[in-house]
Amino acid sequence: MDHDVVLAADIGGTKISAALVGADGRLLRQSEIATPATEPLLEEAMRELLGSVAEGASPRAIGLASAGPIDLSSGRVSPVNIPAWREFPLLDLVGTIISGVPSVLVGDGIAAALGEHWLGAGRGVAAMLGIVVSTGIGGGLVLDGEVYLGPSGNAGHIGHVVADPAGPPCSCGGVGCVEAYASGPSMVRWAQGQGWTGPDARALSVDAAQGDPIALAAFDRGTRALARGIAATATVCDLDRVVIGGGLSAAGEVLFAPLRRHLEGFLTLDYVRRLTVEPFELGRSAGLLGAARTALPTAQLEFPIPG
Image 1 (tube, rainbow, N blue to C red):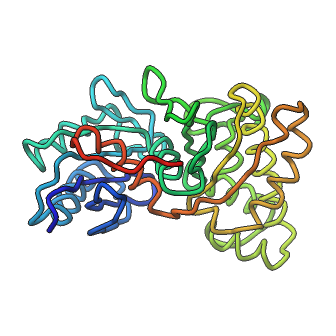
Image 2: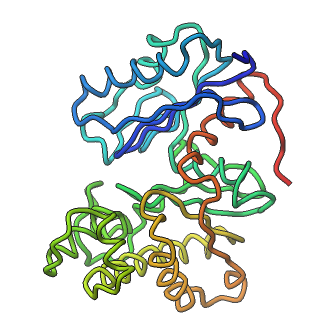
């Protein structure tokens, strides 16, 4: 096993994945589990997952991408969609699993954006927003060619931009957030309230592709809110591109076609109309690769620069 590697983990509300990653972005060993519902099971799962992936290797650093909010100063995380973790000392836990190896924490939306900017759909782009549409709505910004964390490490959190102040309550405690409309669970809840009888977001995507009117309406409603958030961010940050991944992005044009249509109406200023919207190129690996990219400077490993 190559010792010039980092250990990367991507922790979300639906899944936790980990991999050994080379400085060139090669995924050398990878594993994934469903996110457990309780804190003891979460801790046990992290120990088993990281221990098994790192077995026999000597990673130079560890990159941890976690759903947020995160607290960079303390290494604690309070993911909105992982209720079992509130002010959870993630960096301390990882230090007990793999001792003596420096760890770096980053928000999962930022990690996904960084992965796509490094090796995916955002290569060479000066200003972009990466969005993960899944159990929640995560995001990350690249400005002037560099990832922008913000002072707290939570910049780009587009899921909690307000799309409608008179809208439904959000799990963050706010009202009318993009996530309350456009996440997979939010779309499913709305569709079920309209009489749709399917079980989950995957079934909703299939039914929408087959022309089910309620499923199509759910995607139209969700993408309208997402387009509002994107338009606001593009106007403030002068963006060139938005790249979108996450489980719901697998719906393809069922998601992207209404999103682009709504954006046409919301991007009214000339300087933001250049904005393009693209799917992730790295798929489910974007967050892992972004976490790895965050850890590479700490590991003192050279890596390719996007161009």
